[in-house]
Image (cartoon, rainbow, N blue to C red):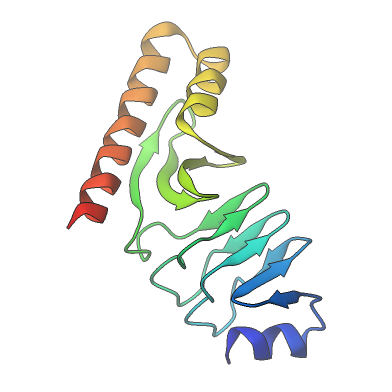
Amino acid sequence: MSFFDHLEEYNIKYSKCGEEVTIHESLFLSYTSITQLPDNLSVGRDLDLSDISITQLPDNLSVGNILSLNAKVISNIAYRENCGKYNRTIFAAYVNGEIQIAADCFLGNIKKFESAVDKKYSDTDAEKYKQTVRECIKELEEMKSH
């Protein structure tokens, strides 16, 4: 099923202006047969792509709140497993026009991520977590330059 067929079948409201596709609320696509998302997709709240067959995030993706996905199958992100106190999978991806970090219920740029980590972890644990994210960012930047 195509992305737009899915939206129509499940009566998910969206708008399309030129190349931009906007969904103002959350979009949960887990366990669907969708294999590709349109470029220039904007989701106002959460975007859940866990257990889905896509292998790349679209160009110019915008997500308002949380981005959930299976990091092992998405080729244009950089991720690490078993990070931090709760052994989370974290990833870096080009979202909202910049490199953003996703970790559980967090999505934001490196500055916001580091601030959140500093508030939650001890100095040593925080630094280890932040270093892991910096490695993801470096890996993602290297991917893009090739």
